[in-house]
Length: 412
Image 1: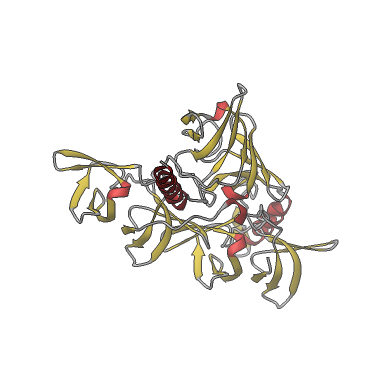
Image 2: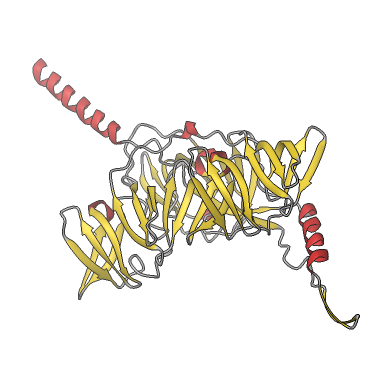
């Protein structure tokens, strides 16, 4: 009897160790307090496509318009157009330099930096960060407000519960326990673009599917297919309306008839742990090869952000050292620099950036701390729509216009 008990104990311990070995410390976890005084604790899936500490909560942040107006006043002076004939002005276009001011800027933060999330009305959220800072974000994506598609919590006692924005009073995020998540394992792989660029990281497919238990839909001839991502080895784009899907048993099928595998695809996201987020549209996508995922970064790996610090150089050789506010907007390491390279969209966390160098009026060269360099354009973070770089040194505040800016080297 003692032998049987010992064998049973060993078997149970082996099973528990196996389950623990499969646990991913990178998955989103916390306590959700509802408006009707219930508390649910477990793994969280937010708006279908955020389920991990490295995923980004998107929103808009309100801006101070002082320096924006300074910049537009300068552009107004520089760009007003006049036509003269024999010294007489016969046409003048002065424009209106305040028409594009909106008061908000696109923003986002990786979930791991957040300590508490508190909904404020139908379209706003208050975030208490690990650093103690408080940030308010408004809607602007499905992540915040009534447009949120759903919030799932895999409660430890009750299983998966579906909640909506109006149900939430607040969320307290906590370190992920060493237990297996009922949602499945995260998707991970290497994506290749049609230009041959490769990006490796955790995958969110069609802004929707992020676990190996999620389903890829499509038609194979007259037959409808619903395939778990965990069975898929690779997906290769064949045209704007179809793709070849190869399973792990090496069977390949051509699918169409679904936005999972045609131009209706909303984008494939790669979460790069040393960069941030990379998004590839269907027209630029060539193929993806899935592989076993490594553990994601755990909750303790995020610090809630620190103020940006560094050295700013101007084109005429002036140097300014101190705390930095980039684009009159981003001032913490958790914030994101946006840009596009070869029709691929980048959201780079400032904490991963070593330097930014102006390459032209419309582009910048961004060098990461891991040595990679990207020439980005298509965003006011990296082109002449930049609202200015502000440097704080003790009691001094210096404003550097994009026209005068050359390089910034971050020390944080």
